[in-house]
Length: 399
Image (cartoon, rainbow, N blue to C red; front, side):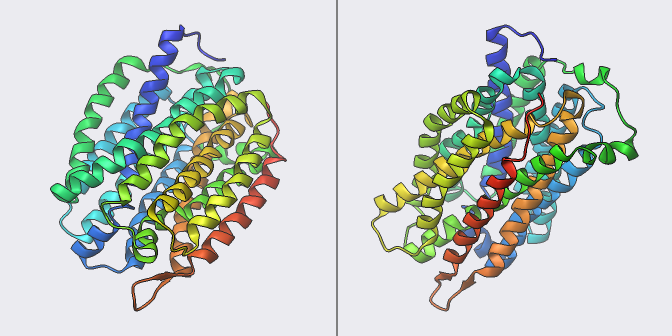
């Protein structure tokens, strides 16, 4: 049953959850635009960099998988704070990594705590806010993605250009301490789910998988993320290698895309509250095909045109995550929600990790430096999205 909070407390809670997500998302996103610096410093090839990106996602998938059987056994507030502390320590370790192997280990640990954190944030939104407010609440919390693109990534690139690639990780971990203090003061105890019957540890998965609706929800969750992360990790290197964009122009891709989603995400959130979740997800997914195809083609167009393509990509590819999250949250009863959101987070991370690896295997770097077959990746991403839309039509809303 949703908690009774005043409007002021609701706003404070949402913005605190958004701040937690912001730190987690920047921690993950900053790796991709740093690709050229990291490959030069550690003398690694693009395929090895793909392993570095995927390590975070796959580790997050494993941790979410473990949390899905335990996520409903603890006060969500305590679990959230503990996960965030672990993430900050791992992020600080990234700043002090002197070799590729040490950085890889630090990213694996960061992914472990980041995976748990994301699922708990969504579970808290599902428990605190009733269905009529949930879409809007999801939209506000997921503004963290926009803010990460607007402020986090460009600032991180600026800092790394003037200092070193490690400095953004140090800055993020210290800034995260402020967010941790705010979370400790603002986030209420969320224990309503503890009053409901719980299965034993070994029966948790069987209890989840007996319900077919959960299967469809997990399928949607995985495929939407898989589709996006076939393309997302390679936007920066292909813009530089294929289009000829400079390192100084690259931050504007994230800045403009993030600014646009700052306005479009609340609109998509309101649409999610007004219309069936699967319909909003289907429309945003179909619209995303246009920028996916445009971004993955080697089109020698002016910088401002590429900026428009990338901005549309941010708007629709990230925008479809709002109805998808609301769809998954509504697919389960409250007593299952922590486990469902944790398992959903797991399959999302597995989907994004394997998508990055598969896309990296498809693409090859030509002798002249151009990255080939990115267009194939775009076509596959669209095809996977069509399957995700079909699966979304099968998900029933139960809460």
